Image (cartoon, rainbow, N blue to C red; front, side):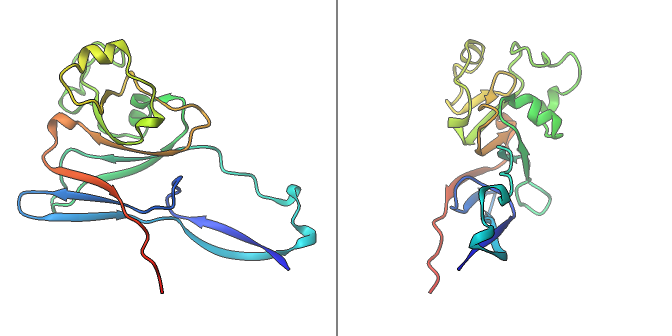
Amino acid sequence: MGTLQLSIHGLATTSSVPRKFNFRSRSSTTHLRFSTPKIRAVSTVPDSESTAKDKEPDEPPTVDFAFVHSVLLPDGTPDVHFRRACGGQKLRDIMLDNNMELYGPYGRPLLNCAGGGTCGTCMVEVVEGKELLTPRTDKEKEHLKKKPKNWRLACQTIVGKPDSKGLLVIQQLPEWKAHEWSYEKILPAEEP
């Protein structure tokens, strides 16, 4: 009897449940699904060779991100960007390092505080993954008094710890979004 070695392809997530976004524009609803990782057998290893020293090292812990832009693409579909980063960093730094739009019309010098937490222009909406983020700071509580509880300042939000894993779904520029959408998990269909 042998041991089966597997390789994973696709976006790695911490759960095996596929995810779906529902987007409502003026006249229609569009469904966008994230696929779960596909697993395929690479080879088998005899029991005598399957020891701890032969195992492949685990991937370093990372957090997967789905950034949803505030404006739809010309064909009416949402602009969703998938990124991956290590935990323990500020959300602002992760977004800027991955060329994600954070400030919108306030992106020019002198129109934002460059991460000081004094201007409130780096607001994002956290759709999923709130448990991976640090609690709101005093600066956030001051700037976001009248905003929904899932809105955060990216410059004040730290994403987990260096060993964190999970999925974070972020709505960019929530004050400027031109469409409504919802996020839900889809249970895998039973195959006969």
